[in-house]
Image (cartoon, rainbow, N blue to C red; front, side, top):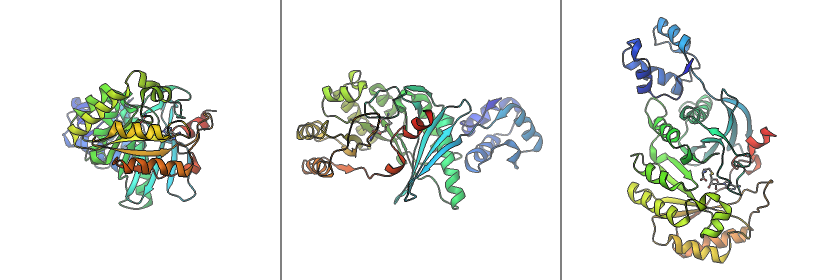
Length: 346
Ligand code: SAH
């Protein structure tokens, strides 16, 4: 059996070419799978009965099944452990924000970047997800929202769950194009943000795809020595090259690049780092998103005091670096990367 979930309308039409079907059948099947929640071909009532029977014999529709879920006390954040047919499971988060429903999807099961502050990488990487498996996460939440209220949908998306998206490049770009397609989710590229630890060659590649998604770069340190200690990938793609790629991406797409900066107590939250960070980003089309670290029990890294976080934010602001402090959601349900999956692995 071949899986159709994850193919766009055009690909379905091409797949069924030898069946001599009219071109609009691909679009109809896509709409059933992605917009009407069809689990089987039998439900696709605008297809001829004979075709539905024939499709069921050769094709299947593989979605994600929900293995576990957690809901924050305020009801705004929900986290799901979604599983695929081979038993692999990943985390997907829904955040109900004032500006709409935002989701966070995973691109790999686990991660092998080895960042010292991150729970996703603790057990290494199991495998890359297919485009259809990343899409299945988004569709799972979209369908849940639609069941709650007509017209409710996923409004924005961040590719910031487990995994390094630019190490699973083809599947991630295929997924972004699928989300954008009218017969899939019809989401604007500007409502999608991809977050990377700084895979330099693939930042340049992404810039040439003609898909103006927003880019976030995980910086976390303003010098190579500290960044290499926190993020081993810095030894391969050092800071200067990462910033250069980010700047090029911003210039080419006209989109302001966001640099994520986790604040870790007595590690990267000092005056020296604040000064270096300002020097690094001065004059660039860039902003900094400060994230007080979500402590991971397996690691001995702590969150700085509130005063320290405020001091760091004010310092950047005073030195004309656009800065935002990430609003925390879902700390009570361990919404930091990888924590729900780890709980289910042990
Ligand atoms: N691999 C990509 C995307 C996944 S991580 C990347 O590195 O950007 C998404 C974001 O969550 C990154 O900025 C990452 O550094 C951050 N993150 C990881 N662990 C965290 C923690 N314990 N507390 C706060 N943010 C964390």
